[in-house]
Picture 1 (cartoon, rainbow over the protein chains, first blue to last red):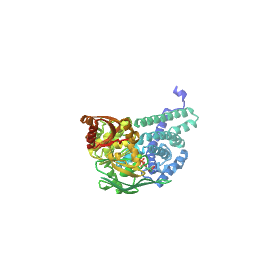
Picture 2: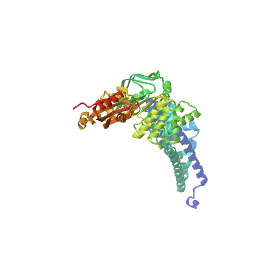
Picture 3: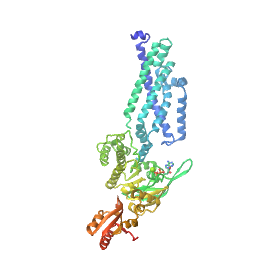
Length: 222
Length: 341
Ligand SMILES: Nc1ncnc2c1ncn2[C@@H]1O[C@H](COP(=O)(O)OP(=O)(O)O)[C@@H](O)[C@H]1O
Ligand SMILES: [Mg+2]
């Protein structure tokens, strides 16, 4: 039945491609989370009214974020070829996609982090100051815990964007389901392969969405 | 304990300089409940935030316990703040932490070890009457309960001063009273100094020992709560006193009442902090051959005893009435007799 409907689909290849996509998604989400959080914190803390209010630092961070967010992802990959080559030692395969994915994803996530932090009640920050809290305490014990649900739902949105970026990265040889759909499906006129790849990507997206929504809801005690 | 000299705060905004607090002088004694009342925009919040330097002063000095707050370095200021608790109108609890963890937060900041923290938190939960709710999140509590958490949190590091910024303004009247009772209780038990700001005279009347009236960034009148109630000098103060007492002049004119009671005597009794003769009326009618008929009045309880006015009609022999009035005059109650019309 399956073989009749999808004559060109090789289960083994599909599993490999899925693994590659999951690999790229997982590590790019991780990297994006770390760098995006740092950038977002920097944007917020150096911004107007922030505890490290600093026009210059804020301007530089914002410029970095805006520029990298403005570059279309496919062009970003091409632009980063030399950097990737230097860092990873190759420009092909799932690992080689990570620098571009993270540099593309982090500025996007940084803006969502900034928005999440702005939602934290100013009164609570003030209460912490009135208790004699250090800046470090305010960041790690007030700002981040109080914005966790929003940080997680922002990460979910970013992760889903990253999954579609992995498919784009596939087209220039990063591997994964996008790569597979293009080279083995589209170029060989095997639309059953394209179809199965699509279904798998959609399933991955749904799983991320589900986990993200669940975690965000669970942690929201408001 | 707290001495404030020439304190001022100017906010420079785009269109103008706002003198939120200007050249303010005040002395607050150790262990007293000091109230600051004023209308919105008078500069009360700015004033209280200057005390723990949530706002930096533009001028003047603040000495708390012989430590000049206004010139402390950042690190010393953090330590000084651990000796001052603060509670807020909107509670400002961390919603991501349970009641216990909220109360533990200032202890974490002060570097108290975990075991000791737990012990202290349990103590505080009991002190503010939240036994059994320690594991709840703030969102599961009522406004009054949230403020109790706020108070427990403010007391965690055993501060010497408690600053209250409109602590009851977001609460309904009954909850307000229960929170005020708690504050009085804490003040008595722990002997800590409380500075509170409010726009409700009721709050001042109920718990404060001394009051300062603020207008346009300045203290325009200051004194013992009873004195201020009894002899308000400024117009604003009179309006605040009327807030709780009504306006006796308008509501009742002695001479008009006298016309309705041609027999006997109509008198006005001013209670100015009476403690021993709280049951004065029944005392008088028991001791003398007079009937006392209360016509009008309002008595309220302050920290220093009963305050207010009663207008009474005394019926009986003229000499007996005189003796009764003489007796009343010997208490702290002031007597005013209607003049003949
Ligand atoms: N951060 C600020 N920037 C500019 N003006 C302020 C700021 N905070 C308070 N003010 C102004 O200072 C005055 C006193 O405010 P506030 O202390 O909040 O009064 P109150 O608490 O008595 O209502 C008001 O005119 C207010 O607009
Ligand atoms: Mg205010």
